[in-house]
Image 1: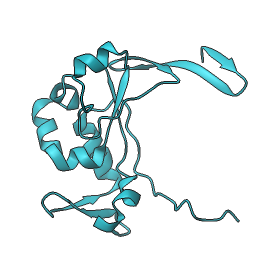
Image 2: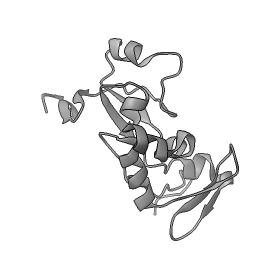
Image 3: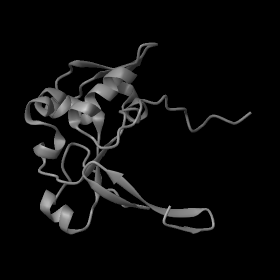
Image 4: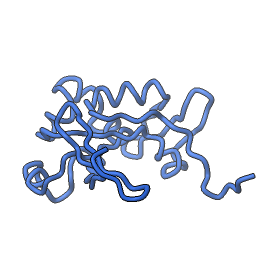
Length: 149
C-alpha cells in the first residue's frame, strides 16, 4: 500500500508483464481486442492491464490457438498485463444457453451450436492457455434478487 485516505488505498501490483498501479482503469478486450484501438494505441494511453473474457476466448478463437502461438499476449501483440475472468458471469448473462450440473455449466456456443462444459478446472486450464497474469476461479453467481436472512 502506497497511500491511504480513509478506507481507500493505492498500491502497486508487481506482475509478470510489469507494474499495475491501483486503483486502475482496466480496458475490456472481451474477445482479445479493444474495439477501435490497436494494442499500440491502448499502450500509449497508459493502460497497464486489460481484461479478456475466458468464455468468449475459449470459444473463439479457442485455447488451441493460444497454446500454439504462446497466449493472448502474442495474439494481440500486448506486452503488458492481462487479467481474465473465470467465465462465471456468463452463467447469468447467457443462462438461456446454459445447463447447470454438479460438475459445471454446459454452454451452447451461439456461433456454431457446439457444446462447452465449463468446470472450475477447465476455467483455470483455459486461463493458463490464454496466458493471463491474473486469473479468477470459477464462481457460482448468486442471484441479486435474493434477500439476506
